[in-house]
Amino acid sequence: MKIETILFDLDGTLIDTNDLIVGSFQHTIKQYADREYTEDEIQAFIGPPLRDSLMKIRPDQVDEMMDTYRAHNLENHDRLVQAFDGVFETIKNLHEKGIKMAIVTSKLRDTAIKGLVLTKIDQFFDVIIGLDDVDNAKPHPEALVEAMDQLKANPMTTLMVGDNSHDVEAAHNAGVLAAGVAWSAKGKEFLQSFDPHYMLEHISDLEKLIEEK
Image (cartoon, rainbow, N blue to C red; front, top):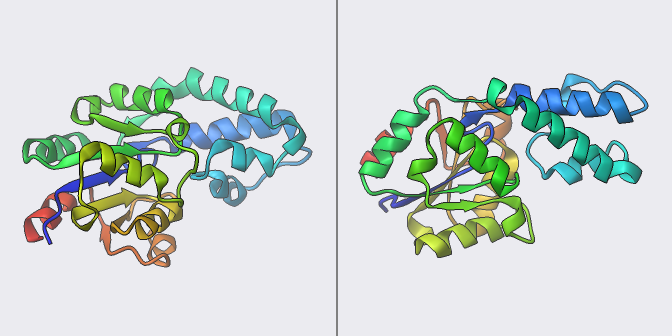
Protein backbone atom coordinates (compact mmCIF):
# COMPACT_ATOMS: atom_id res chain seq x y z
CA MET A 1 0.00 0.00 0.00
CA LYS A 2 1.20 3.51 -0.79
CA ILE A 3 2.91 5.48 1.98
CA GLU A 4 1.02 8.76 2.44
CA THR A 5 2.21 9.83 5.91
CA ILE A 6 5.64 9.82 7.57
CA LEU A 7 6.21 10.36 11.27
CA PHE A 8 9.77 11.30 12.21
CA ASP A 9 11.70 11.08 15.41
CA LEU A 10 13.96 14.14 15.63
CA ASP A 11 17.23 13.71 17.54
CA GLY A 12 19.51 11.18 15.89
CA THR A 13 17.10 10.80 12.97
CA LEU A 14 16.83 14.19 11.24
CA ILE A 15 19.24 16.28 13.29
CA ASP A 16 22.58 15.28 14.75
CA THR A 17 22.42 16.09 18.44
CA ASN A 18 24.58 13.26 19.71
CA ASP A 19 27.56 15.41 20.78
CA LEU A 20 25.19 17.89 22.46
CA ILE A 21 23.31 15.18 24.35
CA VAL A 22 26.42 13.28 25.41
CA GLY A 23 28.07 16.52 26.51
CA SER A 24 25.01 17.53 28.51
CA PHE A 25 24.92 14.17 30.28
CA GLN A 26 28.66 14.33 30.99
CA HIS A 27 28.31 17.86 32.37
CA THR A 28 25.44 16.78 34.63
CA ILE A 29 27.03 13.51 35.75
CA LYS A 30 30.22 15.32 36.71
CA GLN A 31 28.25 17.49 39.13
CA TYR A 32 25.92 14.93 40.66
CA ALA A 33 27.11 11.34 40.22
CA ASP A 34 29.38 9.50 42.62
CA ARG A 35 31.41 7.95 39.81
CA GLU A 36 32.32 8.39 36.16
CA TYR A 37 30.03 6.84 33.57
CA THR A 38 31.31 5.01 30.48
CA GLU A 39 30.45 6.04 26.96
CA ASP A 40 28.25 2.96 26.59
CA GLU A 41 26.37 3.83 29.77
CA ILE A 42 25.74 7.36 28.54
CA GLN A 43 24.61 6.11 25.12
CA ALA A 44 22.00 3.98 26.92
CA PHE A 45 20.52 7.19 28.35
CA ILE A 46 19.86 8.59 24.86
CA GLY A 47 16.34 8.10 23.59
CA PRO A 48 14.10 7.69 26.66
CA PRO A 49 12.60 10.77 28.35
CA LEU A 50 15.27 12.76 30.20
CA ARG A 51 13.71 12.20 33.62
CA ASP A 52 13.75 8.42 33.15
CA SER A 53 17.46 8.48 32.30
CA LEU A 54 18.48 10.81 35.13
CA MET A 55 16.47 8.78 37.65
CA LYS A 56 19.03 6.03 37.14
CA ILE A 57 21.83 8.33 38.31
CA ARG A 58 20.45 10.25 41.30
CA PRO A 59 16.70 9.76 41.83
CA ASP A 60 16.81 12.00 44.91
CA GLN A 61 18.05 14.99 42.87
CA VAL A 62 16.43 14.38 39.53
CA ASP A 63 14.76 17.82 39.29
CA GLU A 64 18.04 19.63 39.94
CA MET A 65 19.80 17.38 37.45
CA MET A 66 17.19 18.12 34.79
CA ASP A 67 17.72 21.86 35.29
CA THR A 68 21.50 21.44 34.99
CA TYR A 69 21.19 19.26 31.89
CA ARG A 70 18.78 21.59 30.13
CA ALA A 71 20.80 24.72 30.91
CA HIS A 72 23.91 23.15 29.38
CA ASN A 73 21.91 21.79 26.45
CA LEU A 74 20.34 25.14 25.57
CA GLU A 75 23.60 27.05 26.01
CA ASN A 76 25.40 24.80 23.50
CA HIS A 77 22.49 23.90 21.22
CA ASP A 78 23.12 26.12 18.22
CA ARG A 79 26.87 25.44 18.25
CA LEU A 80 26.59 21.66 18.17
CA VAL A 81 23.36 20.80 16.33
CA GLN A 82 23.09 20.30 12.58
CA ALA A 83 20.91 18.37 10.15
CA PHE A 84 22.16 15.05 8.85
CA ASP A 85 23.32 14.92 5.24
CA GLY A 86 20.47 15.25 2.76
CA VAL A 87 17.76 15.92 5.35
CA PHE A 88 16.70 19.37 4.17
CA GLU A 89 16.53 18.35 0.51
CA THR A 90 14.66 15.11 1.22
CA ILE A 91 12.11 16.65 3.59
CA LYS A 92 11.52 19.48 1.12
CA ASN A 93 10.98 16.99 -1.72
CA LEU A 94 8.57 14.89 0.35
CA HIS A 95 6.63 18.02 1.29
CA GLU A 96 6.37 19.03 -2.36
CA LYS A 97 5.09 15.55 -3.24
CA GLY A 98 2.24 16.00 -0.77
CA ILE A 99 3.43 13.53 1.84
CA LYS A 100 1.90 14.35 5.22
CA MET A 101 4.63 14.62 7.88
CA ALA A 102 4.92 15.08 11.62
CA ILE A 103 7.61 15.14 14.28
CA VAL A 104 7.12 12.67 17.15
CA THR A 105 9.84 13.22 19.74
CA SER A 106 10.63 12.40 23.35
CA LYS A 107 11.99 15.91 23.95
CA LEU A 108 9.95 18.94 24.97
CA ARG A 109 8.10 20.70 22.17
CA ASP A 110 9.91 24.05 22.53
CA THR A 111 13.33 22.39 22.41
CA ALA A 112 12.28 20.36 19.39
CA ILE A 113 11.13 23.50 17.59
CA LYS A 114 14.49 25.12 18.35
CA GLY A 115 16.27 22.33 16.45
CA LEU A 116 13.80 22.44 13.58
CA VAL A 117 14.20 26.21 13.18
CA LEU A 118 17.99 26.01 13.37
CA THR A 119 18.09 23.45 10.55
CA LYS A 120 15.38 25.30 8.58
CA ILE A 121 13.06 22.29 8.30
CA ASP A 122 10.39 23.73 10.59
CA GLN A 123 8.59 25.07 7.51
CA PHE A 124 7.71 21.53 6.42
CA PHE A 125 6.03 20.35 9.63
CA ASP A 126 2.59 21.48 10.75
CA VAL A 127 2.35 18.81 13.44
CA ILE A 128 4.91 18.42 16.23
CA ILE A 129 4.23 16.07 19.13
CA GLY A 130 6.61 16.60 22.04
CA LEU A 131 6.92 14.85 25.36
CA ASP A 132 4.80 17.54 27.01
CA ASP A 133 1.95 16.89 24.55
CA VAL A 134 1.28 13.33 25.74
CA ASP A 135 0.92 11.32 28.92
CA ASN A 136 2.96 8.37 27.70
CA ALA A 137 6.33 8.48 25.95
CA LYS A 138 7.42 6.10 23.19
CA PRO A 139 7.35 3.09 22.94
CA HIS A 140 3.75 3.72 23.98
CA PRO A 141 1.81 4.49 20.78
CA GLU A 142 0.04 7.60 22.14
CA ALA A 143 2.28 10.17 20.44
CA LEU A 144 2.05 8.41 17.08
CA VAL A 145 -1.72 8.10 17.35
CA GLU A 146 -2.02 11.78 18.27
CA ALA A 147 0.10 12.80 15.27
CA MET A 148 -1.99 10.65 12.94
CA ASP A 149 -5.21 12.10 14.38
CA GLN A 150 -3.98 15.65 13.73
CA LEU A 151 -2.90 14.75 10.20
CA LYS A 152 -6.07 12.71 9.56
CA ALA A 153 -3.77 9.86 8.54
CA ASN A 154 -4.51 6.21 7.93
CA PRO A 155 -2.25 3.90 10.02
CA MET A 156 -2.16 1.49 7.08
CA THR A 157 -0.38 4.11 4.94
CA THR A 158 1.82 5.58 7.70
CA LEU A 159 5.55 5.07 8.27
CA MET A 160 7.48 5.87 11.47
CA VAL A 161 11.17 6.71 11.02
CA GLY A 162 13.54 6.63 13.99
CA ASP A 163 17.02 5.91 15.26
CA ASN A 164 16.23 4.06 18.46
CA SER A 165 14.46 0.95 19.70
CA HIS A 166 11.53 2.84 21.20
CA ASP A 167 10.75 4.38 17.80
CA VAL A 168 10.46 0.97 16.17
CA GLU A 169 8.53 -0.48 19.09
CA ALA A 170 6.15 2.50 19.10
CA ALA A 171 5.50 1.92 15.40
CA HIS A 172 4.69 -1.73 16.04
CA ASN A 173 2.45 -0.76 18.96
CA ALA A 174 0.61 1.80 16.82
CA GLY A 175 0.15 -0.59 13.92
CA VAL A 176 2.20 1.43 11.43
CA LEU A 177 5.24 0.63 9.31
CA ALA A 178 8.65 1.17 10.91
CA ALA A 179 11.93 2.32 9.37
CA GLY A 180 15.21 2.40 11.23
CA VAL A 181 18.14 4.60 10.21
CA ALA A 182 21.57 3.10 9.65
CA TRP A 183 23.23 6.26 11.01
CA SER A 184 21.84 5.61 14.49
CA ALA A 185 24.41 6.22 17.23
CA LYS A 186 23.45 2.83 18.67
CA GLY A 187 24.25 1.05 15.43
CA LYS A 188 22.37 -0.50 12.56
CA GLU A 189 22.58 -3.99 14.03
CA PHE A 190 21.00 -2.84 17.29
CA LEU A 191 18.01 -1.40 15.44
CA GLN A 192 17.67 -4.46 13.20
CA SER A 193 17.10 -6.58 16.31
CA PHE A 194 13.75 -4.80 16.83
CA ASP A 195 12.48 -5.86 13.39
CA PRO A 196 11.81 -2.63 11.52
CA HIS A 197 10.14 -3.13 8.17
CA TYR A 198 12.83 -1.04 6.46
CA MET A 199 16.37 0.16 7.13
CA LEU A 200 17.38 3.48 5.57
CA GLU A 201 21.04 3.80 4.61
CA HIS A 202 20.52 7.47 3.75
CA ILE A 203 17.56 9.77 4.34
CA SER A 204 17.03 10.04 0.56
CA ASP A 205 16.08 6.34 0.57
CA LEU A 206 12.66 7.56 1.71
CA GLU A 207 11.97 9.00 -1.72
CA LYS A 208 12.84 5.70 -3.38
CA LEU A 209 10.71 3.81 -0.86
CA ILE A 210 7.68 6.00 -1.55
CA GLU A 211 8.09 5.59 -5.28
CA GLU A 212 8.37 1.81 -4.94
CA LYS A 213 5.30 1.60 -2.70
